[in-house]
Image 1 (cartoon, rainbow, N blue to C red):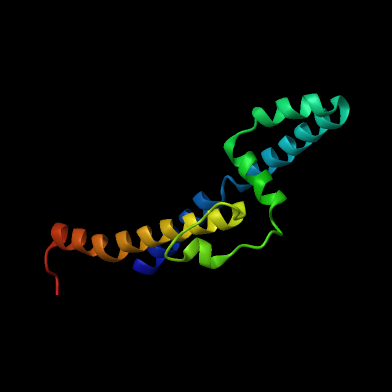
Image 2 (cartoon, rainbow, N blue to C red):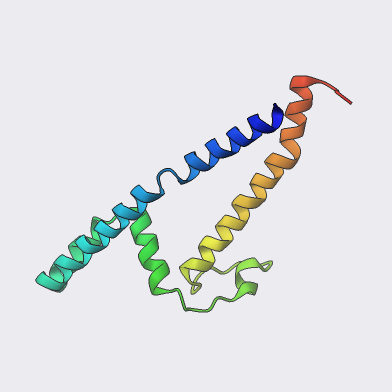
Length: 124
């Protein structure tokens, strides 16, 4: 009975996680076509106004695309004195995801069991 419940919960989690993937891919494809069409038809004056109206994920995606091959210096990012100037966007994103993952590990590894102990008591 528990195995069946675990399988149903896992299938539900996968469906929720990947349910919006097709919508995101479809929206991404249409926004790329809309961004390139005015830039080729109108010239540089239209291109500047289209970049101002972009959403945050599109700006980050464009920055990641432009600086994707630029090397990063790990000692400037992860060293004792941090210097993010001159580092590519992908390295800054990687650093922030590392910090976020560390916070998640602390929450899941320390605070979660403490809350479980508070709520349910010693069950050993």
